[in-house]
Length: 184
Image (tube, rainbow, N blue to C red; front, side, top):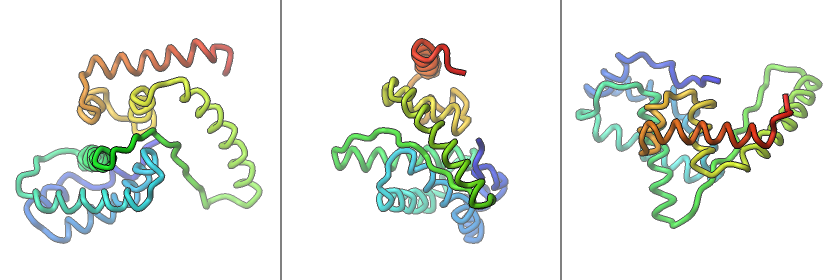
């Protein structure tokens, strides 16, 4: 499930780093909505998410001359996660990964009802399975299978070793398989 995080060519990021205002706008309008959806996977506090997205873009703009050539998606996701966790740490709150909600507007009312009912059943099953996991395990599973990040990218984002990411994911899958072995 890829989002539109991959829609900006690398040269737009390079132009942004060189100070081109149009490139900054292009990046903001291409990614802000997806960043907000990603933020909802971490917290339901919409105002906090908006503030953190704003901070990410302000910081990126202020540091644009020293930013390296990199994947825009990776940079923005990591920066947003860091901003959110910094805000939680400052507020001394705890955070659990929340379920992401996607709504479709391309189906009839009946189709939407059926899809929502099926999605609700799947969501309940997944939530039940994820409840077996620690917050770090859920986070690693989210990055690997929802965001489709590489193990190295997950390692960088979470600030743990590559091997630890592998272990988290393997233990998570093993724990779920042990409990739900007969479910297909």
